[in-house]
Length: 490
Ligand code: ADP
Image (cartoon, rainbow, N blue to C red):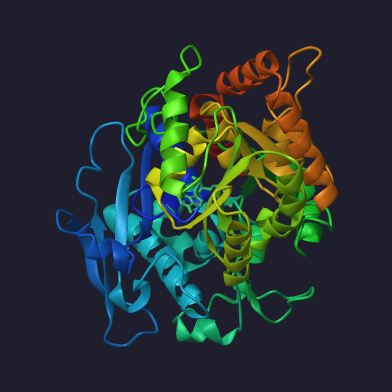
């Protein structure tokens, strides 16, 4: 199949969260399977500054940016992305739109991603690339599904193109005042405006994508059910129920070429399930970098996260002081995000010097060190469409303590000491009591060495590779293309 993928993040070129790992991992797997995968993403200012365009070839443009007189965009093909079996990555360079980092604020966001969708379709049309599937990731790419239903449909290259929208995070919908369409030179895209419901009269990219894409998917089976409920649907649940026969839940995969402690070049020492000695060195290195006082055998509780409400940081900062006063363990937290959470975590670290470390950074190497150097890993999310960090933690021999929601519910099984089965500690209630119980339970398991070894090994042996998850996308796309877009998928 020929697959045109549009996304805001793609690892390692531009990464804020899991979206980047997934667009890159899935595209790589599909390309290795022999599909022709074309990825179109922005060239953010910081990518330009890193010199990413230096060896790239211009393939389209300069063309005028709609709504921005005098400004133009150019599409470049990334150097080295035309190797056999690799996705072809194209960067939309438009300094007037993509200055700075991955995400902007306010209306600038809408202007950015309308241009991204428009440029991706223009690129396909001008190159004669006839996609079978247009794969849109999150609200940032949803407008392309609408554009394809409109005038672009008449382009010969899109006659046989069907659209798939993957919802990675329903909490970000792309909501703007209607005036933004005129400013973006896209006043004709009226389908982006919500006609009814709470946001009626405003632009809502994700809502429009849900209404217009040929199929929808989200990133775990549990979350596919959750988003059809008022509790998790963020106002879009009525629409998702209406289109539930078009909605699939496919768990994200892990790219173990990048996430395996046996080969990870970012770690100070390597290890595997049959020889864990290197994990002790990683633990010592983490303690030294984070400034933790470590006694032999003291468990380290890690976390790597965006600091956003979704991630359950409120619960965490309220649960930890009581537990830290009673039990002996240390914490290493890595994250960036909302100032309120930053100061709450700083406060916790100041209150427990040498026992709680908070590193405010977005740093790939440190993230790998936290996965490897910790014994337990916290993911107390209020909602979690899939979650990758718990899967990385398991592979690195670090036992996840997670809330039972979304992909966390689908990937972590509560350990049963009697039978020795299970991979982590799972709690239901999104409150202090829930997390307190789950962390205490896991600390008790840690105190029984034979039991702990078994639990660690169970997690390390789990397989969440793209080889396991990817075929579900392949089947979804093949059914869509072969069935002329008409078949129900669930
Ligand atoms: P989300 O996409 O909601 O942020 P996921 O669990 O799906 O959550 O993915 C998070 C990804 O972002 C993981 O690859 C994780 O290692 C990475 N990440 C999050 N925060 C940081 C950070 N401060 N430094 C480095 N990597 C981070």
